[in-house]
Length: 587
Ligand SMILES: [Ca+2]
Ligand SMILES: [Ca+2]
Ligand SMILES: [Ca+2]
Ligand SMILES: [Ca+2]
Image (cartoon, rainbow, N blue to C red; front, top):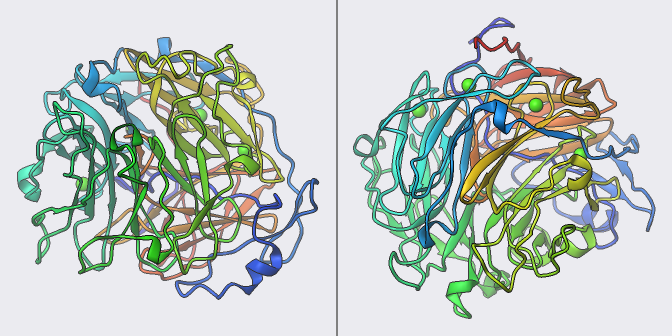
């Protein structure tokens, strides 16, 4: 299937939530010798990048091509608050049932390449906004009101193309029956629970993830429950929903018991085995000493099974709120960032991919972010949505973390600004939120790091409790009137034949100047907030990148050249990427 450059994008073609892999270099990472001793990956070469770190100095990075390419970190980009001009008039509100939650889904529902936004509303109706932003200009949205999407009791939502028809669908999570909305094009939807044979249940749903198993036509879905509605004990009704034999409808859900007040879930191929296991982050505020973070082994055809200490899994009790998974050490295996109250966690495999044994490197990497960095409050922070991506296009991953008091907890910070941690060449991160101009003291919740005006600079969408979401436009080193990019970039989306047209489970490798970044295409994680669309990668001073895709079944595609500043679709089986040219908004 061939499309000319300048053609409108294939419906729904794209990938879902990704960040880009970065750099090693701090002393607690695997040494070159250790990494080199690792067995070759059965699932195929992950494009591993080895680090040679001079202790305390800037790392010199050696890619698989063998050439060294020192990287210069950029400063934080500047953001301008476009909320008022953008036309967003919405609020995530409600009492106790909506203290957690407050998600946003970013995805393209009208095939113009721009991410449209669906906001959870809690006790207020959820709201869909169509993106009308001019190319590189101010952010502009129009409300798309409909009884189908304006649902109440929504905690969050995740976009994915469930029936692989090229139109993005939405898993809408609620305090009460969850809803699957099937995309019909032009930002219209229909309730498709009956069509898919999915009972929305009655739980307080606060987490979701999805993956395709084997040759199934439908994805396997995971829904995570928080408290028993009306009570203060953790609900035991988190569920795994697989397609029924034969395929176009769902079977009877399987309970993921014990439940432990789940606030984030993510299917990820953490061991690069080809099997996507389910990471579950849980809130110890309610499970007390009885629960733990969880990793469920999800073997096609077998019941789900939680990994135990006998498998190497180490129990960890945190106030788990959100998950971000991204290879930071350059070995091809993702690190896992977990938000909490107080210190946040960054987990890395302790003994390779054979066992799910993780140790924490958050302190060494500078990402504990346990207290407000400004504003005068010295109490511990409350962190929610984490997301890795490259906001200053220097080729080094950055980390955005939303923060905000649960409601009025007096033992946690009331003035708790979100973090924008800027990645450094030595693998550490430094705070950049103040320089970026995004310090506020709203109670932030879900978020999206996404290029809303297709200028190659990632913008920020932040949902707050009880007030309007904020839309921050990234203007690089420029200002509101004259944005100025800080570095090169590419935006890539993946496409394969049905089922799973968006290649969820694929790994995109982006090679720039001898370094290779790897990015897994996933659905899930964050804090009840999901994305579907372009995979963004910053290139720094490079004028091109080489991109290769490992498709969900393990097949490795060819390396392709993508020039800086381009949007491309990579179709499975094609030898070259397909250029896509954004058109200006029609108003
Ligand atoms: Ca759009
Ligand atoms: Ca669909
Ligand atoms: Ca960066
Ligand atoms: Ca932008």
